[in-house]
Image (tube, rainbow, N blue to C red; front, side, top):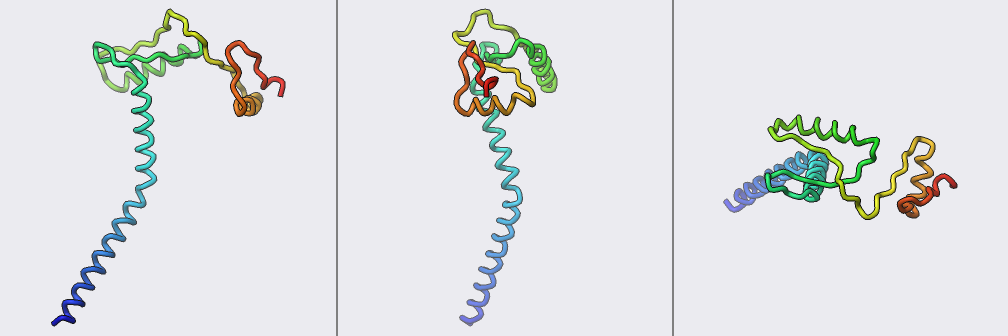
Length: 136
């Protein structure tokens, strides 16, 4: 009688172990996808937390945009906003007050990209400074 109980207990333990193993295998197949999903969600929330909430429930953010890319940014924001089916319009407008120091921007191509990356490794030049990538 005790021997039969031991056999039954062993059978139950082996089935439980096999079930846990199959469950872990099934979960392991989705781990990478879940990790990327969580990282993407965290990045979205991090970006949204940089916005300021307006009185009307709108989100407002300020950012630097290169002048030649302003139309592209407007189109992109309008396209993204149109996909949300919201009644309120989106707005991209220039801020009248100047910021203390504009960021540095260099237009790069295939040839200058590698040199600029080398310069960025050691420090990005300040506003209105000469770009040392030209001399490397």
